[in-house]
Length: 614
Ligand code: F6R
Image 1 (cartoon, rainbow, N blue to C red):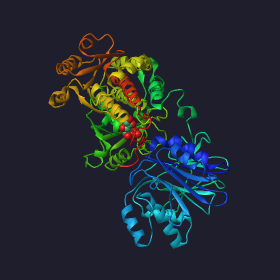
Image 2 (tube, helix red, strand yellow):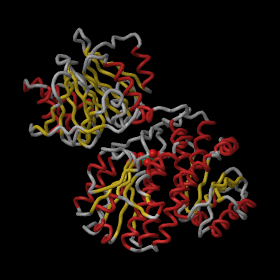
Image 3 (cartoon, protein in one colour):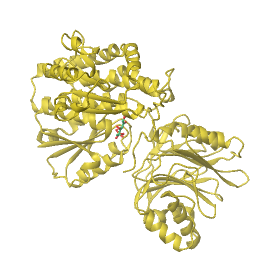
Image 4 (cartoon, protein in one colour):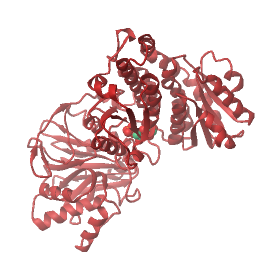
């Protein structure tokens, strides 16, 4: 949620900042803005509601010179998306500009106090409080910007990654973080900062991930300095980025979402590489080996996640229960954190998050830690907060996911959960080795099965034309296919804005069946698994009420093809691997329906890729 970027050096800051904002636009696109100190010493702030391209248009005839600047792309929390509420925010004397990703929870109290002291506000945002407070402290205590930022942050409750510049110090940016991500790139006589490494990667591979409660002094002339809120210097731990620019481009596809759907044979290969070895006979998940005792003795596993990651987690529940015979609960992180959960040191909590930055998931793992539970993380973004705040974990290694609707991360998460379940089952001896080997051998073929499934692209594109103008959709599945139904419905609603509900197929008769008529398409996920005969009945029930059925079935299916209106046949895989395969036609269906409706699939309205606020 919200992206920040900063630059100080000899180049033209504006060009670097705008390019960086485009890379971070997945984090929010309600408004964008930039602050630059010009060579003549003017602090210029330009902002525009809407996408970064609006800001670029606005800046066409403006002075965009200067070697230092900060910029922001916004996902609105406090105050509507407008020019006025866009960042950067100025201090009242227009000496300081600040950008912020996060939420200042006690902004009201601070704002009231500042107003009482004569301060005037321009926006409705929580962020403006921070810049006014910094300026108030700076002028009243006659201190440096660094000291003022430090003191202001001591008074602030909430989450932040901030970058601050002042008119009279055109060589230094002060940046800080707590619970919102911040990376600093170290170049030669120049430095960069951003919410993630994507705006930095083409300039330097040397990065520092700022930790909670650290303040960074980012200067073009001096080495990076980090201090904590108590003014103690902390160590600067330089890491090398493993990210390439080509991963951040569309590579000939019209949208990132389509590119990411089509990348899945490769991303799944990357995900299993080195983990499924010896021709499928052995599964090696180093995080599980490191946590061997914890998993062997776990009385319960609780998986916490949000959105698509929660759907992957539900599949993880079925996998771990089936294979390891350990009770598993799956919780929305946002509910779990406020549910006063009963936890102890025999619980293992697994946090699943593509970004590794989701605020609710981070809060849930903090809570689990405090209660003595062992915490395991499954993330995509290397160096993000969740891997850094868990006891052990596994990366899904699917590369940057830029389309706001998650696709390749979902299948990567399901794959990693499958491998984790298999690794635990092997340790606990809860599954015969020959069964594990059979699955291991099939996992090695998954990239090919996915490739084969992607050949359905044209069939699905044609099918999408029939359903583009439906107002509602129902998605049904049972067992492993139930979370796939939830995920299919989420994909459709988030990018096409069509109302869609995912449901366990057998629950339909307890209510949703009342919705079914000739206008209501039902997508039924019905691979050849142990519940197949049961779901055939559910298809019959929909047809008996004149509903139109799109069925995802296993190739060679005999029964459903005779009843359903449209059939999509996917390769035959073991039951536990079906979600990876059956979810792919659903990703394509939602993509094409949204495209037919002219929607922006990569940046759906109101959404952001990384949800770093509550
Ligand atoms: C939907 C989607 C979201 C995310 C959710 C959690 O396509 O992407 O529902 O899954 O916001 O994000 P992460 O996985 O980053 O914690």
